[in-house]
Image 1: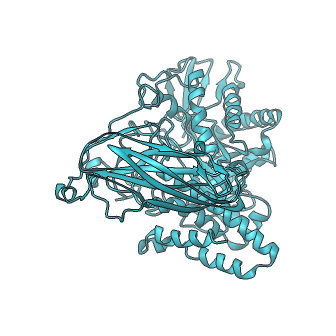
Image 2 (image 1 turned 90 degrees about the horizontal axis):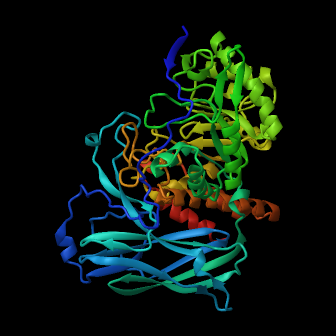
Image 3 (image 1 turned 30 degrees about the vertical axis):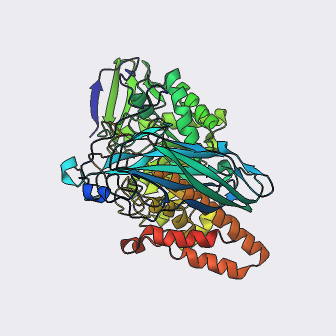
Length: 584
């Protein structure tokens, strides 16, 4: 039965958010972390032979804030990098005395021929601690008291200096972006850590002859869904205001520089679930039923947003959400009633067709006029087979060239010919023949992780190495990429608390307000770069007939099976694989 809900309609969306929780202004960018629920064992700190300790450390480890690191002191970082690659490591500072201001100084790196790797391509940033829980029941609703909570290292801050309390660990994320035009060779230099006195650490980077293309040319199919309304809310500005668009640019440029291919475009209100009350998920298109019963669609915001995102560097696909949301409620403004109408309709019913057919006809023509039709899909998330078949049939009636994107928690081989962009949950597999056909036809074949997966979903408490695994797993399976549902679907105060009532902490976002990147996001990019390197090297080995090298590469890839993570740390497999990858 058709259900109709009448809601008072505001011609102007109430879209101004009062409080700025982004801590992104130059005069207000320091925030206080939550108190640590884990007690500090003072005796361990009292045994330190030096009040302040500084050392390079493993970037695959989240070091506890309150615990003395059990690592050897390492004063030199040696690494290999391709031209065009971004590499990173961690530096730890831990002290049993207060450091009022910790800061870093970085100079150019030089090789023996006098070439420089400029300091502007090197960055040292402070890692902050955010509250997290544990996997627990996975997708089940949760309260903070249900699971153990702890502070975990994840946000990478934008501040230039930081105070360090007594008996505290402060990580520093050191990254180097090697220019594509850099001369090959070994570059050496130092980083100075100012912590009551100067500490000098040595850097030695061997730049190899291989070249990594710019992110826009990466083959890896990255689809991390964007949620623009949360940027307006966290910064306290009006939704879709000039200020909102200005603030969105650095966030989505950051995503574009990770190789993002897809624009997430909402074409209905709340395209996933109306119960997500914390998340607005507004439509980019206004649906208006005129007094005479005809339909009108306002695409002004849609056009502005798509053009903006393309200008940010995300321009290969537009995935429109969605013709099937989870509760099947749909909304439009009725001029005759002067109200916003929300009704429920199953796919295939008369009400459903009356709602969608006029819009799809109009939308198709609009997209063709803009030159976007060929890169646009109707995107669907985890919906049943029967509903999918109805939508596909309806789309093909409108225009046989319509494309469909699907993120599926059940594999439907019978839909292979109808799905252009097919993404499977990590525990599912494409048919081998279907996968080969997809790749031959240049159709995306990707996987995703979410709250059902204990491993490889980038939770704030997960091993950083698992984030890098994502690229390697795609390479191992012969897939084209990876999907994650939330780039920035922030909870109430994401900088200090990553927990959320429905899912394990970190499920809702990969980066932090500011924008601030994260250990998780940087390690995902590392895995994408590895995917690109594997692809380039495999093609090189095949073209040169270097069969033994190809066999060694394939042997390394076979190690990347998710079930192995129940007994073997992700970093153990990853470190060995990367040594092999960087040996060519």
